[in-house]
Length: 85
Image (tube, rainbow, N blue to C red; front, side, top):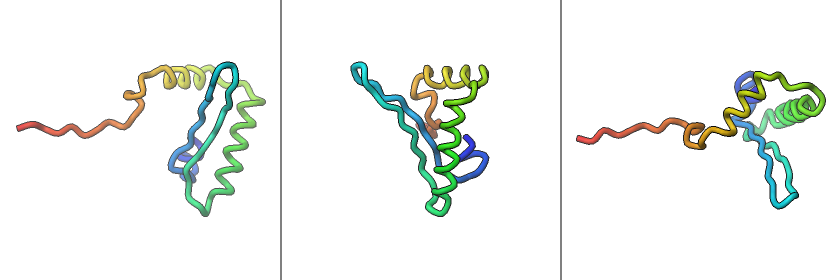
């Protein structure tokens, strides 16, 4: 949220945990403007460090759990509905 909503540096940032039979990896990505890539990457790394070292507030955990357990269609943008004559 900081990269996109507060600083307007990216079009979106994402994180995912990929698991495959006991092995896996975590990844974080963002789509951003070239001229602010260095600043956006530094902020992304700072936020990753915060997750590692600081306690996450309960309100953020509840919001993240609600988002991750919601059906994917409820997280997508609403689509315009066409009217039938």
